[in-house]
Image (tube, rainbow over all chains, first blue to last red; front, side, top):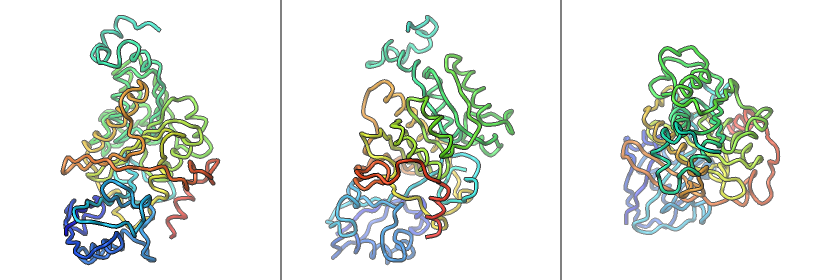
Length: 111
Length: 269
């Protein structure tokens, strides 16, 4: 069983610059187990997707076949062979110049 | 309003399009659009909107033009380095189309000034470059029931979604919270290819025109995701979040908050 995963630019450093990876998903039932496996294949990526408590961060969405898992069964959303998964973070870049005044936030891209 | 002869000539290639015609062109000439940010996204968006004959184009930006902007911010030119971006933008847009009235706002949008500024416009384009402004613009548009075209870029990725308050999910339905820092490279390290900003900014201009003309399908309830390296466009579904703090069933945000603080709180987590 294999699952295709779209990796967003900010995480591609952890996937050797690959925008899409295939995960051998034998025995994987749901998103929680998928994230564990992804973290084993690409060390460091789980910590970027999940917080210290293991919860998926609020500015990162995970889609199974174009559906947001927050509106399915969150990390218990079941997976099956041939599913494709997209990991999509909030990005704020607008291709402008200045950093936001007091707060130096991340992923504002475009400067 | 009757189209002048030079207007019929200028806009002839879009007037002959099915679903536009003279009536559609009149709608464009009467439309009022506010663009937040005269940068990588705002530049192509403003250029196409002015060229199409938008009646009134508001441009918000507090910055001045820098040499390193010119690789992607195609509203501005070498001779305008050090000039306020809104002035440089106005100059260029007037050259393209004297029909378009350009209003410049050389300021940063805040909770105090935004509602007063957006109230005069039919639709808002967010081409800003930071999370506090993005959440501020989203909330202000939802509260004021103003349609919003949102676009974002990061390196080779782009995103766009259109928000019709009361009818389609808002940016908070999509991303309830901004990210804390340290999880992604800083903007200086990140870089951006001008053409990527061009793709997303142009999609925003296209959304605005479809909204004004009432044609086609808007990017409502779905997020368009672009990857420049694969030339790949995808759409994912964005449902309305019943728990959304600003447009959900029991909203907790009924007036604008302090967005720097909102994002700093997130930072400390």
